[in-house]
Length: 75
Image (cartoon, rainbow, N blue to C red):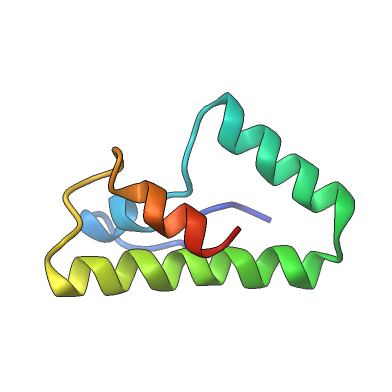
């Protein structure tokens, strides 16, 4: 299973990329070891929805600090 959707090249790839880095990877690993895969997948879908909605509303400019509310919405 991959952590990003298979999309054509373009801004969607940036919008739907899961956060990277040690904290994000450790969090995802902890979630995968602690809860059923369906719960993890639901949380990832919630993150995708939040990112797409923010992009649709024009309030998403990249992967920086503005990704934090999307992460918090799925925690």
